[in-house]
Image (cartoon, rainbow over all chains, first blue to last red; front, side):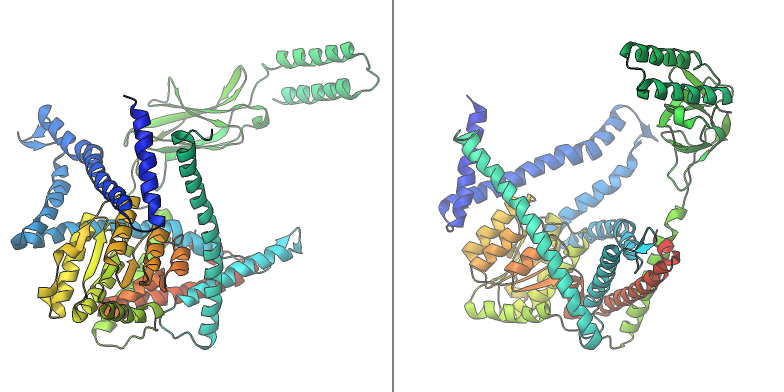
Length: 224
Length: 400
């Protein structure tokens, strides 16, 4: 049995079923959608067990007991792993109405830890470097002379950042000077969005090219 | 060392003469001169090579331990070298083992993977082909972890300033002070969207993004879900919430249930309307699209953090004629939402939405605090740019 060939045929037919969505909803699309959702959910569940739970939680505790690495006869060396294990089990209390409030401990711990980690990471990686990077001289000198292009670029950058910050100021109505600044900020945003739109569309076209190469090359052998 | 340099410059001149002198038309004679130069160079290579000087070894500052830093002054013969070999041992008398190698011109090396609390001695060897010159031994350097990274004091100061401002505004809001927030167009459309769905007899659909409950954008999206669900409960309109994360699903169920209770319609709550699809990105997109085509919601809310599936979802919502209100902090996906949706909350407007809709003191105070920090940043940028123009980098140094 040529499993590779079978895999290619299944992949190609499912690709065409998904593409049939471009016409309208139909049983082929429904079938492919349900297969995709079901298989991905099951696959990721199995992957989470083998990649996350088993090596990070079960195996260390099992090995501690198997190798006798325990304190006071029953506390394993990796005893602290019980904490995330219990927090994970508390999530299942959501199915028992009487004790479903216990799920909030897991939620609070998760949100609190990740928010705390994110604050310093975001500040040190994004906020402060971007503020520092915006501090450019209004007159850029090159070899003792004012460089018109560099000066223009610096002004463009500084004005753009200030205008965009004014747009995201929620304590004042966008009227007068604030309104003019906000309008300029919107222009900057839309130009940036247009550029992002352009290069992201290029990336999406390259994904389509990959799919076409699979269908026409690997499946139908119409191209090499 | 001086002899070596003189010999080297002398031979360079001879080399120049041999290669460029047009009188030496005989290739053989030119080759002979070159060979002589190379032979003399090899014979004088044993001239004393100068070692690096002023070697210092110390615990790497502001780290989590296990690392020493070794600095030195480059050898006077640095331009002739292949590089420097940094050698390490637990005792000053040796034998030394190689800890690492750096190229010529470098004057610093960081030795990682060490044991905290143990003494280490270092020596730096200047190396050429077939020869080396060792520096004096430096040490002991004892690696240790520091409690505080002093290089990040500016981050700590910024956090304390931000937290102080936010807490002050929250206190003011709790005391009943009226804090103004300007009108945000997308949020005014929420009531219109719910009303439209009710008139058409169709459900609402709320897609809370792809990230888990620990992401701030998802939390903001769920706050908006609470307000949308409350409006939907008042109009007796079903709310469909397909989720990609189990924790988001359970939280969304709680939020919607509470919203229905607050609206006085706990009987209308349907737990099955808030469902888990799959964690897979495009599996989730396919499932949401199928749901949109079959359920045909009158309004679609795309609130949260999205990736490449954003346009797939927005285009499908547009194709069924639903009014779409999007909101995300994903900069790469905002263009697609702006193009395909009726209203888009850009970045921080999502966070402002929760304050605008709920008017809760904590959220209002947080938003006002953020605004004040933004104002301070604008002032810092204005002053900083003027100072940079005059060559003063004081403000710039605060953000390094």
